[in-house]
Amino acid sequence: MKHLFATFVGILFIALAFSVQTARAQEDVGRLVEQLEEHSDKFVKSLGTALDGSQYNGTSSEDEIHGYVKRFEDATDKLKDNWGDNKNNKVAATEVLERARTIDTFLKNHALGDVVTTDWNTIKSDLERIAKAYKLKMGM
Image 1 (cartoon, helix red, strand yellow):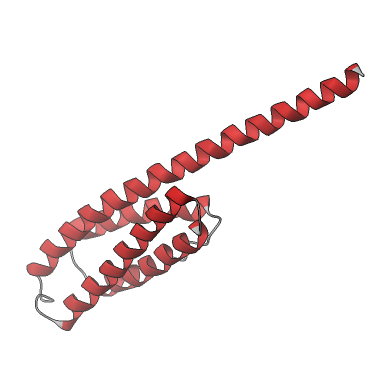
Image 2 (tube, rainbow, N blue to C red):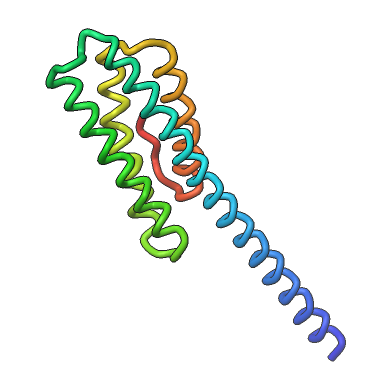
């Protein structure tokens, strides 16, 4: 009987530890999504400044990147909203990564300066951590 009780207590302890670890991981992802949003805002500002002073100002390329960024921000907002409800997180994270790939490709083909590159690399770092949290492939 003592052995059965000890086994039960051990299983209960493991379940509790796993539950605490899962809660911490979810909390970390929540903070990461908030951080991604802050870094995205900074990127949008530096991108706008770079575009205004570039050869792309007033062109279809400028419209194109603004559209990509808008869809990325919308996907990020959806991830943030879904995270709070703990629903469709992986689907929302996948969409964020897909939108980011489009921006990444654009930036590789259009030089917009060191500030934009640095801000985008910060976002990519956030995205790597989000991809890892949801066990997704980064693809950038």
